[in-house]
Length: 395
Image 1 (cartoon, one colour):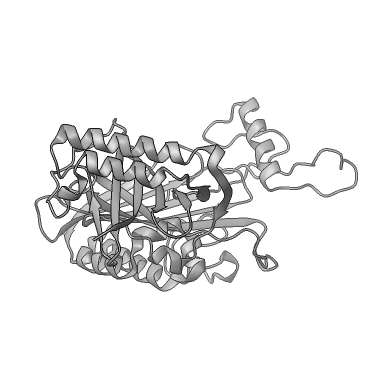
Image 2 (cartoon, helix red, strand yellow):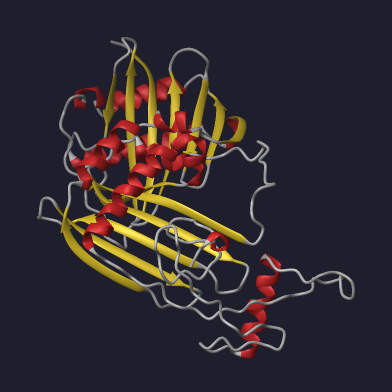
C-alpha cells in the first residue's frame, strides 16, 4: 500500500479547556494544505500552498522513526494530567491508496522515540504552514450536520450538567440554576445529584447533593455515541444570516446549556473533558436531543428529592438618562444603564439591604410561585425552571 497523505492533530489541554489544530496534508491531488483551528468559541480555516519537498520531508520522518511498524500496536497508557498542568499532544493518521487509514498516537513505540518523533512531526507541520505559504484564511461556522461528522476519540460519559441563566433589567436580578449528575467512582449504578442556585451578584450559592441509584449514564452514552455529541461543541451560527428579532424581549435575556463530561484518562490522560451543547446547536436542529437530556437530568433531581430555594438578592432598579439626551428623552435601562447602576452602587458602598443613591428604587422585587411548574422563589419576569412568564401567572 502507498501512503497518500497525512492528517495531523495537535491538542493543547489544561484541566478546564482544550484547543486543537488539525492539518490535512495530501501527497496526491491538489497541492494545498488545509489547517483547521477548533475551540468551543470559534473555528478558523487556513489554506497553504504545498511546497515541492513537503511530501518527501514527511515521508523521511516516517522512515526515520519506522512509523509504519507501529501500525496495529496497542499504545501505552498516556500520562495523567493533574489539575495544575498543561499538556500538548500530537496524533497523526496515515492514509493509504486502498482507502484505509491508521492512527498513530506516538505511544506505540519506545517512550523516548515516540516523544521525539511527535516533536519532529509538529515542527515540520508548523514549518510548512508558515505565513509565507498561506493562500487564504476565514472563519467557519459548522452546522450541526457537519459537527456530527467531526470524529474525536473519547472515553465514557461520567457526568452531565444542565445550566440556566436569566437576567432582567434590574441590576442584581440575574439568576443561575445548575443541576449536575455524576457517576460515583467504584459504585456501579450510583450517581451523585447536585443542585446549585445563585441569585444576584452575591457570592452565596444555595447547594444540596444526594446519592441515588440511576441508569442515566447508559442512556446518555447511547445518545452521545449515536449523535456524536462531542462534535456539537463546535456548532456555530453564521452571523451573516439575518435573524428576526422582532419578537425578542428587550428587558429580559436568558441562556441555557448542557455540558457532558468524558473520562479520557486512557486516551489523552485527561479525566474530565467537557463538551457543551449550547444554544447554537439547539437552533441548528438539536432541540430534541437537548430536551431528552434535560428531562433525564430533571428526573434524577426529582428522584433525589432535592429542593433548593433560590437565594433572595437585593435589587437595584436604576433609571439612567443617556449622555446627550437630558431634558427630553425617557430614561434608558439596558447594558449601558446597568453599568451606570454598578458604578453608582460602588460609589455609595451598597450594603446587603440594597441601599442605593437617591435615583434608585429601594423596594425589592417580590418572589412569586410559578403556576405552570410550581417552582417557588422566582424573582425574575420568567420562571427559571420552565420559562413561564410572570404576567401569565395565576398566583
